[in-house]
Length: 465
Image 1 (cartoon, rainbow, N blue to C red):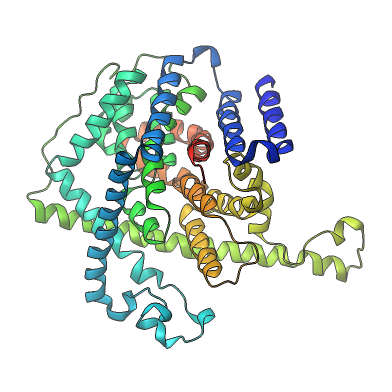
Image 2: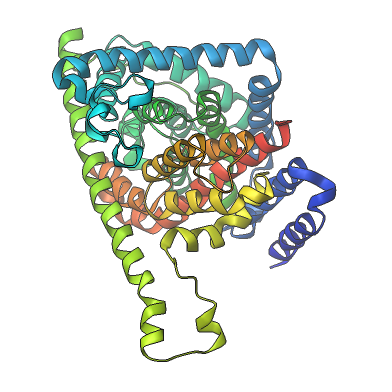
């Protein structure tokens, strides 16, 4: 209660003096607020290894400084983003062969072919199935080939060694957290699959939190393809490694002795694939399942949003029919919707990320959409809003800074559906731990979501514009 009182006071002071401290001061207040929020709900603050917390924060800040402030490192990340864009172009070549003009996502005014059938801008719709899903197939196949040749494991082990050396976390949890930079929340644990059944609750929790705080390589390509700032997406994925790990250890400290304590050895098992062609085929099949799952989830969740919006939109007309004219009823907006409610609830979080005060409602809507549905829907909403802004159809356009910070905060799998995904995916590796997974699921969602906000707040402190 004491911690909650302190961070609440920090938030109130930041809001009261926003004209003095500016967006960077807001973000600095947010760093303390988001960290304190996790600490306030810690299961055992006395058991926290503060070396792990200290070095985790140092690594997170150093990574952010290197990318955002050192021109050479930033150029490397920009080069990496160019590589990602080239991967998208490679995927587009395959999609164009199969789908023809349907794979051309350009609007008519920018040379689009398929979109010319819709001369009115408001009738043209982004063809998600033919543009956004094919890169998932290609990247999944590519990563499987890299795994077959052991290249992916080398990057994972190098990153894991650095974090374990400073943070003194166990080998198994550090490897799995590092793998999340490239792999999804159910694929990364495969790196340490033999150890999952015997993991301590703290290790298992770190495994889950990291999955929530990252996105997979395939999704990274998709979101950059939507127009999200590529440096922000790549940076927050790397920053989420130490951040998710130390926040997990802050909420659920290690009180047992892990089986892989002090060990970073990864079982370099022989690849299950006969050759690169076999690996690419298997990766494509896995990517197809993921793409179909993404499409199905979007159809269902967007339909639920429409359902809720319809129900919310009928509240005020129903009150009017019942002739309820109380002052509180008159204050209900005519266009009440789920996104508007999200904007109210998450605007304070957006403010503490360092978002421009005029943009907090819009970014709050995106944060709420990500949590309640998924980041895919949120990124599509941001893409649509940006297109309307470029067309001059938005009354309150968002600043470039707000778009960048939104990309930092949206890049993560922290949503309610992911709890079920992890329960099914990780639970299949260790059926005897399903009860632990179910018990830790909502807490992992909470910490994973806060980790993305904390990454955004640190970026908000460092960004000058």
